[in-house]
Image (cartoon, rainbow, N blue to C red; front, side, top):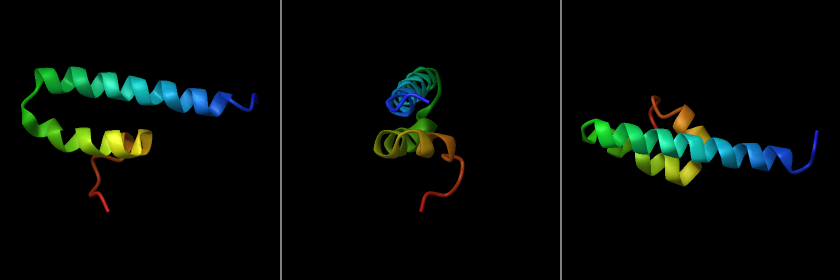
Length: 55
C-alpha cells in the first residue's frame, strides 16, 4: 500500500464522521452533545465506540 494512504483514509473518515454528527445534531435534541466532544478529541475510534462507556 501507499505510505500516506492510511493517513489520508483516516482524515477522510474523520471528516465524514464529523459531517454526519453535525447533520444529526442539527436535526436531533441535545443527546448528541455527548457525542461531539469525544469525536473531536479522539477522532474515528471515539465515533465508532461512542455507544460504549468512555474510559
